[in-house]
Length: 84
Image 1: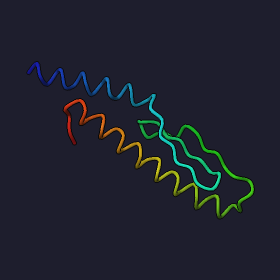
Image 2 (image 1 turned 135 degrees about the vertical axis):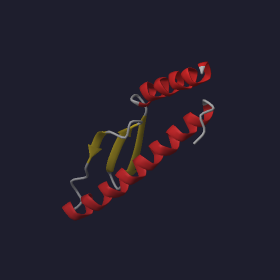
Image 3 (image 1 turned 180 degrees about the horizontal axis):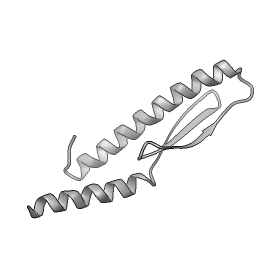
């Protein structure tokens, strides 16, 4: 039972740490930054691109940033012995 509480403590610490982690993706002057809790923190657009180009690139960058965050958090969980 004590081991379960230790694991919960590790998960809570990881969750708190995740809020401070930043993962970003860039393409053609467009940037999206998300944190380890998968919340968007920053979006930078490139005014030299059309609205349609920016929309497509923002989607790509958002998906890449989320994927980077998922991989980063999974690695941290494995490092704590809480493998996914």
